[in-house]
Length: 358
Image 1 (tube, one colour):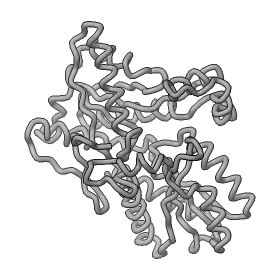
Image 2 (cartoon, helix red, strand yellow; image 1 turned 90 degrees about the horizontal axis):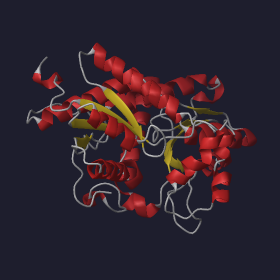
Image 3 (tube, helix red, strand yellow; image 1 turned 180 degrees about the vertical axis):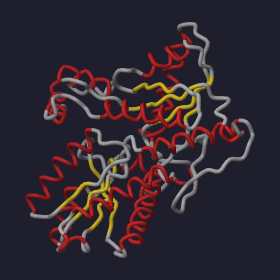
Image 4 (tube, helix red, strand yellow; image 1 turned 90 degrees about the vertical axis):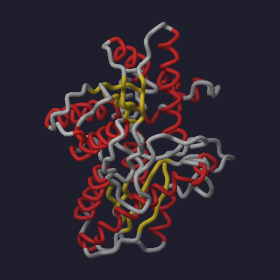
């Protein structure tokens, strides 16, 4: 194995995700985990949980993480990478602390971490780092020898993440009726967050209007739209819009909301829309409900043809991207220069978050 295909110093990879309920009885306890410390009454959590109850109380994210776990193991094996892959969640079983405990007991001492969040933000990056620190503090209190844990860089613009989304848009456009296809608009969607959180996302040099969170999404949206234009010969109008707002009404969050955007497009005479969930790694509940259910119902009410393109999920190209991220970081840790793949205008992200990041 060449130096650039050597995972050392890492002896394991941890897939770190959000977690979700796997049955009706799990919904409220799961939401209690998510909102811990915010003082939200149980009755309110039951109301919020209706999205999950519509789907039998089961979030799709866990099965999707199991599929990604298998895709990673398959990719590693096919490329001669003898590295175990484990899975832990922030808010539901398998819990992060339990997984790290098991990994420590198995003798792992240097762990690379892939979080299922591709962009910079407090909830998408720094909070995962805090979760890792809390889990390690628990293990230290138990008297265990702690492993070193390194979170891999943001991968929003890695070709293995972007190219499957381009193909998803092309497939969705092809699925539209021919008479509306050429005029279809692209609505790139991501999770809305408070504007204050967006403005302070990324390194302090990026802080300001929308911060790194908005800049990174806009760069990916532009990259996808440009690729679609090159491959179809048609330039589709596009915009970055938001979904899944969950905060108090008096706190400003990123806008416009996808449903409001669909209304605006319909009023302006747009013939069709492809919704492109670039902010999400897989088809978890916010995609399943906010786009496939709520936004699709709004489009039907308006008589606006709409399609929703696929997320990356367990696409083999994304598994290959994770392998790239792991090997480039491993090479960097050994002091060896390695190619850092990135599309768009922003270049590859940093390995180590600077002080004040997010």
